[in-house]
Length: 69
Image (cartoon, rainbow, N blue to C red; front, side, top):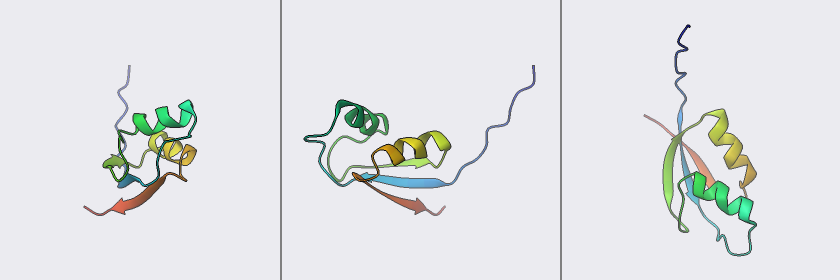
């Protein structure tokens, strides 16, 4: 079986800017899955389709910026 090469994606900084109070359980799980806990917490992730799909689900709560290497 052939091994696929892992594609290298650019990095993005994702910050939680709004509260999770009053949000649905699904939205809370998406934010937790991104690794964000409190307001103003930040994580740096690869800009893969999986991560960007999660960001699009709760984009009104987040601030996303490109990170240069």
